[in-house]
Length: 295
Image (cartoon, rainbow, N blue to C red):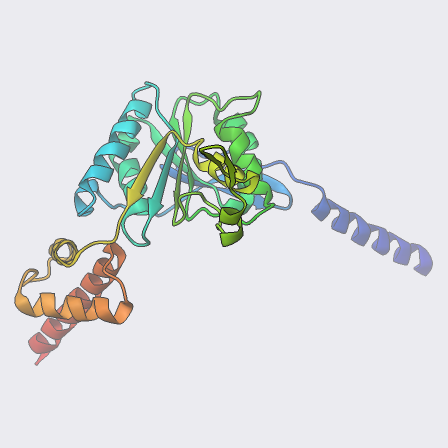
C-alpha cells in the first residue's frame, strides 16, 4: 500500500507539472473595464488585459509639437470615423511627447469608440492572433508599440512587417498600428552598410542590408518626426505644467532660472524633463506652504 500511495503522489505531481506546460484557454476580455489594454502571455496563452489606471493626459497639455499633433490627430479622426487611415510611426528625440500624444488622442476619442492595446516588442509575433480577436468588435483599436527598435534577426521584425503589409491575411479595418521609436529605420545602422553601396553608372544602389532596414519603416503610411525643444519652448512647457499643478509664479524669473538649472543637470530640454521639474517644484512649494501654516 505504501508503494501504491507513493506512485499515486508521483503521478499527481507529474500531472500538475504537465498542466503548467499546456497552454490554458485565456479568459474573455472585459471590454467595459477600460479604454486601454495590454497583450500579456500567461502559462503559454495570450490574453488582452484591461489597464486599470489610464494616464489621463490631454492634448492641450502637450506644448511645442503643434504640427505633429495636427497630423496624428487628423489621421486618428479619420480612423475613428471609419475613413481610410494610415499606420503611424512617430520618431525622434526622447521625451518630446511621442507616447504622450498617443495617450492624449486615446483620451479624446475614447467616447467615440477608440481603444488602445499595448503590445511589447517581444510579443509582436502574436500580432496576427490579436488582430483575429478584435476583428469582429465594433470598437476602433490602436495597436500601440512603444519605444520600438530591433536588432538583426529578431522575430518581431518580420512579424510586424507581415501585419503592416505583405501577408495574405490583411489587418482588419478596425485596427491600425501606432509605434514610437528613437530610430527612423527602427534598426541600428553601421558604417559598413554605407561602404556596401554600389555605383551603377550615375546611380547609387543601397546594400541589401540597408534596404531591409528601410523596408519596415516604409510600411508605415505616416511618418511624424519630433525634435529637441529650444529654451523658449522648454520654459513654456514648464509653465504649462506648473499651472496644471496649480503652482503660483509659474512664469516668474525664479522658476525659469531653476528650470534651466534642472535641465542642465539632466542634460536635456525635453517635455519629460519639464514635467519632472514641475512636479518637483510644485511638490516642494506645497510642502513649504504647509510647513509655514503649521508654524
